[in-house]
Image (cartoon, rainbow, N blue to C red; front, side, top):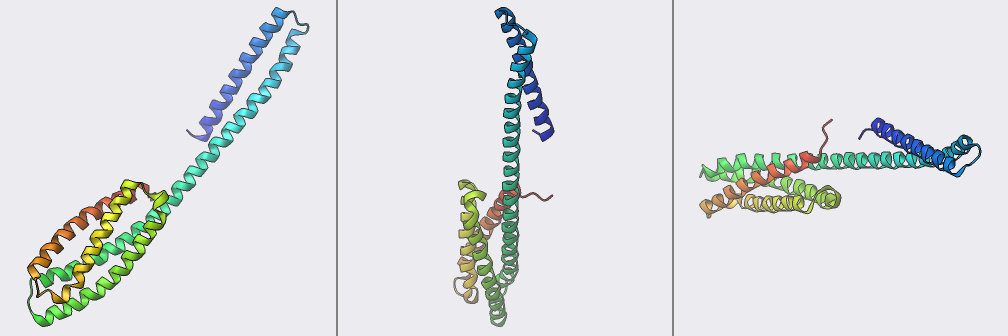
Length: 211
């Protein structure tokens, strides 16, 4: 409810209660034979009106404060989720870069090329480890008010999958040993990673305001 509508509704309620009070008191004084019935009724009604108005103002103030607080929390949540989203994007860029080299590695057996590719993957993997640590440290720090327990589970599964991919990348210089097995494991982990990455992005997008 907007502030204008809230004020209008509250004022209408206060006015309605004041009119009801006036009518009830006026009738009661009339039945009791009170002198200066109108004057006494107005005196009582004005007193009640002041009380109703005070309660109405307090209600409006409390509502507006809670609304401001909710907006502030939502804005802070949006900023933190945007930071995590950007960090997650950096992690994904490194995973994608490593995957390009991995696909070349998969189809080549030249020892010299394998050595060069292994070194390049090793450099990317080091950057990936650093980016992943920063990402999940931030998630761990803010999880209490950013994510539900179910949402946090998605990110925890994503973390485990990225760590598995990192371990496979660490083995890249030695792919001539059990190459087929390692790549079958790698392909499975990449498939799971892409699914979990998409789910994590959806969770973050739900809380981010891009305005």
